[in-house]
Image (tube, rainbow, N blue to C red; front, side):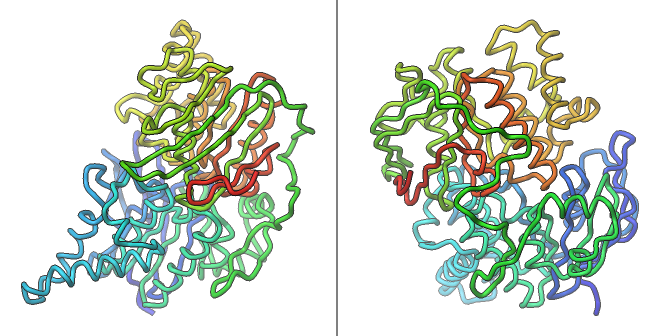
Length: 499
């Protein structure tokens, strides 16, 4: 079978360091090849090579070929490729109009809209007409992901590179994305899947390539790699994951065993009794424009506890977190810190109030200045919010970043030179340097491999043990992450449906 995309002996070097070294792969029509490995292993750089995109100033050798030059891309952080100033309908309409130029002029408008609505439906976005009127910032991370998938489908690409396409998705939406990618492959389109989600890899992939430090350390048919891994790193990834397979309808998604009581993170101990109420929400109604998207009557967060906020994509989880942190000011009601109402906007909160409630974004790339080294930006938090001396702040930042597994050489780079998972850990370190009373983490484990995710959960569990004045709020779809919680709130359609 002839490949529709092929990479031969690819080497990508930046700053004298090879971030991809000797990688070869073939993407076959109608097949899914998955690249798995830790954050920073070279998966995204390899995938982007199929689009002809490389880091600035990179030295590239090897050969990359894509049939007809048509490759679609679904990035890990979709907000980075969605124009924030244009509505979804305009973004998709630009692509669709290029597909209907052969139609008579009188039919082009209707034909373009029909193609857009079909692509939205294929990408599992219901109520496409209403979705077309929204701006990207009015969508959840999962909804943004599916809009970008619709863009790729509209392009008519021969190969689709899907970079963590299930990031930020609830289990039902994840199953639908799996079904959609299966359907894409069934149409003869090659799918290159870059993923930490081994459940999805096991369900979708025909071939698997395991990457570490820029190299492919193991490759072969998915079943062989899954059941008889030859390399030690592959075995470590699978051991940390520990999955089983359950039927979920037309497609099968491998998931971890689901029980009411989840196993705690490694090293976790029984939670201490809840402390004082540090944060209260009263009568909160948040809006996007004139449309209410979230209603919370009463919610209390206590020190020494972890609150997990669960719910499907678009249920209001991220909006709640942003209201608490002063990032979404279009709301009524009150958010109280130690009994004192917080200003709705972060811009008018005091330095102490800003430090007290810290928010770690699902898409950390959008929260970093692309022109300043990561270490400088993390250290700046301690200087700006706590008045720390610059030298002491840099030392503290180095220690926090090292604890999260980020080497000193890595943190002196610009944000664009780090992987999504690496930057996500840097964003957590930056928030911790504020020494917050409330730490809001929005899907912070979604871009991490199983080994790194477990280490991060261990760190969060240790924070709760060591700091009895801290409260943790986890916005997540991941049951493993939610197992850290001492209390759970479930949202659906902007309402609390379960405590």
